[in-house]
Image (cartoon, rainbow, N blue to C red; front, side, top):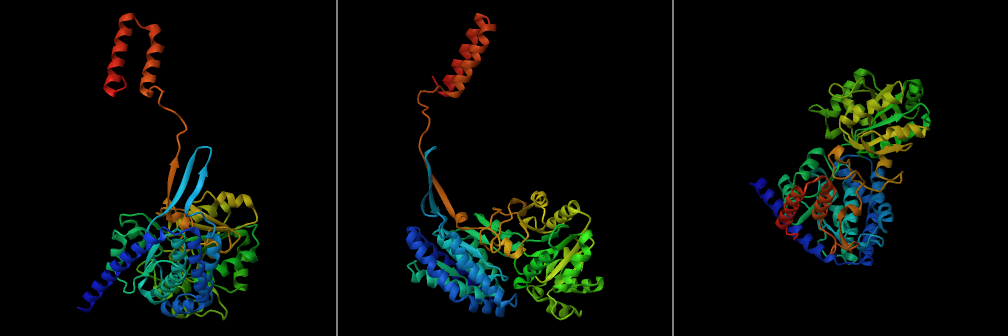
Length: 495
């Protein structure tokens, strides 16, 4: 009976949140640029002031990642994001083409549903709240069951800061009693116009099956290729900095390291010098068994854990100061568990003859769960980077840490925690999602050509055909053709 009551309460709460947010969004849709910017600045201040406490709550509740890195993500999802989006045209006339006489006017999408993962709960809630409000949308969050408290706290802070700056009450909501029934109710309810899904593949697939527009992401099984002309020390430093950032919980983090055979010894030595531990085949098998359940499904207890913790849990001994674990793999797919996505501090390791072989291996790894997402390159040869631009991904990250590069922290990409994988990865967009993905565009188009005196295209074509053929026709044939054309025009109403 308790479970039954909980489900009923959960679904009813969801309905109430959606109705209230929908009404609030109708008010917000009338706000000006100045009003929206005032609200955003208030939300950013609240996120900045609470970045540390939200990070602590997230780590305490989920056990994933590191407080200092989650604090950075909360700040990045607020201040850095605001600096990027504050001048974006999302209200009123956003473009005027004076040559073609077309005026483009932005309108909000309406009420959004935000699906929040357990790996980046508070930063994702902050990020989605800000991009939703910037586009004059409301949003209701469905948190991951293992990150309810911290997601709810982040959403409440964003709501209260928005309302304090003039936003209508209930413009941001969050389910406090999460259940599968509640999530399904929110996905399919009439009030929700679009879903922004960040989470596991099953949840994203469900979002796309809800019968309404959705922006989702896919897994990011990112290969990192160290090419022979790379600065090896810097490449290794960037990879370790990325893989240890929040203990590998960002989907853009590297999953496999590929290096040219001619620099293999140098790469291995550099990893060892900087805190990488190369596991024996036996140790790799022990760690793999601990990392995955039922094939290659990630063990939640190993997500976002430090290398020392994973080693200890797997029954292997590693040197003090070990930052990442590396296991050599001889292939991709079944039988090679480290070739799959690992949102933690473990990397697969491969060596290849040259960049062509690296290309082929990268494609196999991407097709093993990561198509459309990202690839990481370390090279001093620009031509190599351009050759890899033909690979089936939408982010080719060169000479940077993949985690920070993919989300736009160390690159010029848009700051985002929803990274589209395009149609290759089953996503509706290949972009880092911004407020521009959350608006509708209406167009006022003025006439450029006058068709009032122009013959009907079919009539003109028939007349031209008759004229072209008349020289070769007899008088009777010509008369018959004219009658046929007139009959056709009468049927069409042209004469």
